Amino acid sequence: MLVAGGVGAGIAAGFWGKRKLFGKARSEVDLQEHEKAILVACVTLINATKQQRQLSQTASSAEMRLVAEQVLIPLANQINQHWDDASLKENGKSECEPFTRRLAYLQRRKLDQCRAELGRIALAAMEKDAAA
Image (cartoon, rainbow, N blue to C red; front, side, top):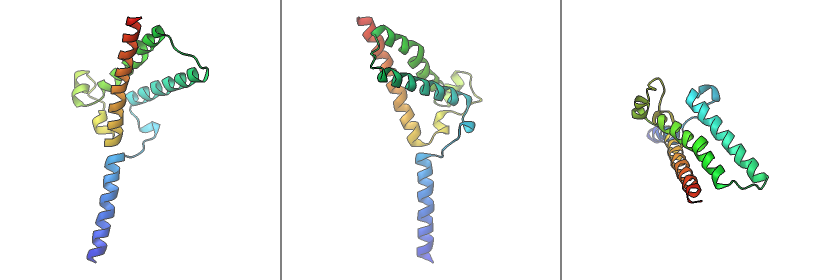
């Protein structure tokens, strides 16, 4: 009995830990409006990048600066505005749930790395155009 109880508790703890780390998949219906907007922007950016790569085209520094100003910086700002409770309160969006509560640990960590990378790419594009 004791062994069976221990095994059962171990399995339950394993499932609980997995859920905390990886979260639960959500359908598009379950997403908040700002999450849908961020998702659409990311998909559009990815598709444009794939198309440019397939056509073997290279963007000029002026074009990259435009992408940074019009796409990357606003996307990073949108993520930052919804990052945590303090950001939501600062931006007057208290009806939303922040990413820090809505996402599981690994997804939150990955999104945090991506928003930092967006900023790095945008700054590099703007510096490159300023130097040209």
